[in-house]
Image (cartoon, rainbow, N blue to C red; front, side, top):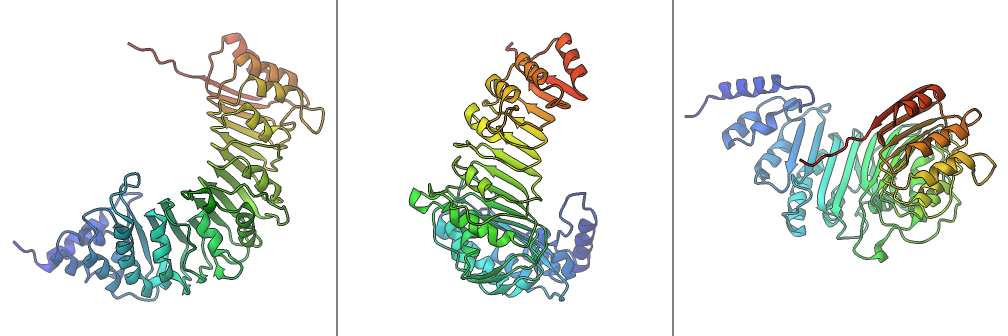
Length: 423
């Protein structure tokens, strides 16, 4: 039985009205997948109902007819669109590179006439070669309404540069892009602009792991690319899972406008390099996650977060002469009694303890003992005292030790790890 168009319009209307917090506001595109009749009726709806399209590239719901219809809907100048394109199952590729490229080519070909009205473009692919192949559709585009751009791949099967020499995105607030593509776009010979002066931006440089080390990124080129963006903008920067060459950074340019820095799964030799390039009064937060540090360096951040650091030597390289206030350490086997001893007795550049002005310490997990932590707090008490101490998933302590910590800190909390007892 066929329902009249008026009834279908009512269904669309009430489906749209029945949204919940956090859900996508406009849902006509979902109902368009039901059948061709529903698609044609949905096409008669207001353009606002077609403000968002999610294209799942590795599912049977990849329907060219719906994609083409989405972009053919009449729209006014102020009717912006958001697009999320990517696989449903990121960890198990079900498409070959050529299949994925063919599907993304279709989407981008339909999208190209509308790039100027796109406010959010998230493109997630299995293969970097797909990003490289379809990038030419964006070459020369003026994307004046774009706030968020996401060009992320899971497998680095291609180290070629993007086919973009000119691109204007003056109002980008969030950029997620593989590290090599970022370096390509910020090449000084290209006419690429991402933000206007004094605009805050979140930059996340994502996975880039070429099959051989010859494709690794030059640290100097990466820092220079960051400096080009950093000159006039306050940036929150994340670099994760990137392979860098062993080339040493010369140390000429400086990052002066970083607000925060997060490094995840980064080769330890790069950490001192980027720290050498830091000269930012804005830097309030640094996180080192699952990255080993191979030489001494000093971080200028107020708050330092360390996660998954395995070696105590590596961890001490990071904190030894750090002059910040709050240290957060989570799941770091390297945070042991030896490190606590260093925090109690010495630093490299003066006679005080490591983390000389730190007064807030938060520990999750790790491999320290409670008596060693007490000795550290006792040795620092007074001039280098710990005012705020929080321990989660730590060793058991008795009432006397709990009372001691309470009396020698302004704020104290200790939660022992739960013991797993086999039945």
